[in-house]
Structures are given as structure tokens and as C-alpha cells.
Length: 535
Image (cartoon, rainbow, N blue to C red; front, side, top):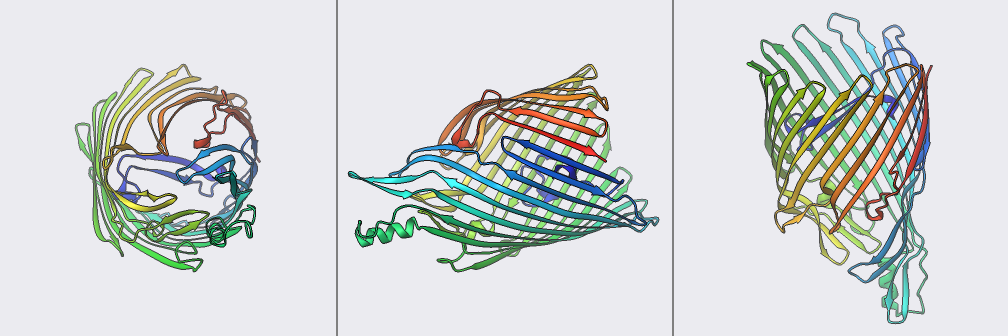
């Protein structure tokens, strides 16, 4: 829930040395609020896509304890997208897809015990429970056989129920030179899905072998069960001395997946993966405006062995208004349980894992120049990410897919950004990203990426406890690649907020010109509004 978030950090560039194998291109770090001062925050929101409410209550200091409690609930509304066409198997689809809609709720407790000693030692414990039940509907489809049309999907719908529990325990403290932290966490997610298809029964109409084949490919009902668990241990210490700030530590993680999509038929099967790592990074202020950040991570995977992940970052302050930054790093990502062992046989689609997959390996380089001139700021960044053994889903035959290592993929581009203050209330930002993401094996562009992305935004804030703030921003995406097609579209969005000391109200409109891209689930114009009060 937004009421529990303190801030969001975007760590750009190769970050695998510090954050592990998934940080090949960067990290988005969501930092939650620690229990602090006593307060109660109530919120409500509604709009085209959903409505919901949330509550966060913090007790304030009670002896050495400080705790917060949060609860949120939301009802996701059904939004429909046109699905019409004929695929390579001759299946004719004509109808509407309605992706997941239903209800979700979350409840959690976060508490801190302060030892109130010289080292400022604290113990923090948290538990969070998430629950949702979502329904997805699929367009009707069938096949033309001469003059006979066979409905194969009729009112096809799938309900997924998810229940997740997350717990953590953290111990922190510091001395004159050190800041240290140790933590343990456990997560468990269960997922149950049931799919129904109201197509006609062709018994007595079609030959028995054809009817049997259709019952296998397009059954009247299907189900899946899955359970995911993760144990994690971590510890780190940061030492400050002379011109160095050194952080070193280690972590261990065991993830497991058990479910019907890993075994033959509906037999449940399970697999697990263990990772352990040691890392060290140094923030070294060399003088002359130069700062170096060397890092190294040694990671062990129980299935793929050992791998070292280096990184070197550098910043050169030419003067207080101009700087050059550079980052070089390696990346490493081992295949997941699903990518290796998936055995999905679901309504005429087959997706198979590949136990012979190799880990992804990457080399990344970023170079940027930043400057300020009065109220105007600018930045130009060139980046290149070369990935070997990229793991991707490859089509084997009609409606049959499996995971493979793509020999090589190159992701290269230039990002340019300008921003400026206009007095004390207004500021604007303009950015452009050029991206060339290519599968070097066959020369095609990688999916789910745009060649050009342009964003222009204007912001207002009168900085008054009883005042106004707002934004208007426009995003243009050119040559957005998805499923062998390229899309170009633009959206204009606005939001506005009014404050009355401890009360505030927000409203806005996304996609003012009602642009719709059904294949990308761009729905069209959407409105939203909400209110929050601090007691």
C-alpha cells in the first residue's frame, strides 16, 4: 500500500555485484516506512480501473516499542480488450479478453524494539498477509471445417486465488565507524486456479477420435495448484575510514516451487534452487573531484556452481555544475525453476521448460554527462548491455513453446533529459530514449520495448498547507515491439491535488485522447480520484 512507502530509489546501471543476479541493468528499491511518530492515515480511491481503501496506524513510542498496522482492500474492475483474428493453427478468435478483475486485500504489522543503548541497536519484526481472487475471461474461438464451424472456446474463464504470507526479522546497530545489519525472512505463496469452457459437447456429432482430441485440447474444465516458498538470510557491515566507505556482507536464499505445472498430467512435482553470495563494495573519494566505486560479488548456485560479478563505477566532478559518470559491470542470472521444469498443458497451448538451460551472462557499460546552468539541468547517457545465453520462450510448432538460450542479445541506446525550474512553483521535464534491442541470433528486435520514447511533463506546487499541486505529462512511444508487430501511440495524462492541512484530495485523467491498443492492453481514457486524511 502507498501509505507504507517511505521512498523509492532507482539505482541505474549494472548492479549485480551489490544486489544479486537479477540486478543486471539496475534496481528499483522500494523502502517502507519504519514505525515512528504516532499517526493514523485513512485513504480512499476510486476510478475507471478500481476502487479501494486503506488504513495505517502507528502507535508512537510505547516504552521501547513502536508499532504500525496497515490494512488495504481493493476491487479491480473488469476492463475489456478486443481480440479478433486467425492464428497459425486456423483458430478463429472473435470476442473480448477481460484480464484479471476481482478483489484483493492486504494486512500487516511492523514493530520495532529500541534497546536505547550507545550502539542504537534495534530489532524490527514484520508480518504481511496478501490475499486476492481474480477472474480472467477470454474471447470466444473456433475452427472452420468446410461448412461446419466448431466452437472450441465459449465463455472461457479462469479464476486464480493467491494467498501470500511474508515475515522478516532484522537487527541493526552502529558504532563510531561501523553500521551493521542482519536479517532473516520467509515467504510463502499458494496459488490455485480453475478454468472453465462452455463449448458444446460434440459426442455423437464428430468421430470419437476427433471428439477425444478436442476434449484433451479444449477440456470443459482444468485446474492448477502451486506453492512457492523462500527462505533468506543476509548480513552486512559498512565501515567508514579516511576516504573510504566500505560495505561487505553476504546472503543466502533458498527458493522452491511445487505444483501441477511441473509434473506429467496433474501430478504435483517440486524443485528448489539455493544461492549463496559474498560481496564487497567501496565508495572511494580520491580527491580532485574523482570518486570510484569498485564492487565484487562471488555467487554460488547449487545447480550451476560459482560465478564472480565485478563492477566499477566512476564520477568525475569537473566543477560544481558539470560531471562525467561511467559504470561497467557484469551480470549473471541462473534459470528459474519454471524456466527449467515447466510442463504447462493448458487449453491447446504447450509451454515446456528446459533443464539444459545455461545461465544468462551480461556485460554492461554506461557513460553519461550531467550539467547545470542556472535553473536548467541536462543529462545525456549512452548505455550498452550485451547478454549471452538470454533466456527466452521460443515457438517450436503451432501452439507449442519452450525455453531456450538465445545466443546473444544487444541492448543499446541513448537517454537525454532536460529539466528546469520556473520560479518557485513551476518546473518542467523533457526526456527522450532511443533504444536498439536486438536478438543477434536472427536480427529481430526484442519484444516489449519501444524504439523511441518521448516524455514531456509540467509540474506545479504552491508549497502551501492549504494549496494546490498537479502535473500534466505526455508520453509518445514509437515502434513498440510486441508479438512480431510494431505499435506507435501517444497518451496525455493529468493529475491535480488539493490540500487542507491534514486532508488532501487527488483527481486525474489518464489517456485524455482515448487511445486504445487492445493487443497491449491500453484501455483508453481512465479517470481516478481519491482522498486521504491524517488524524
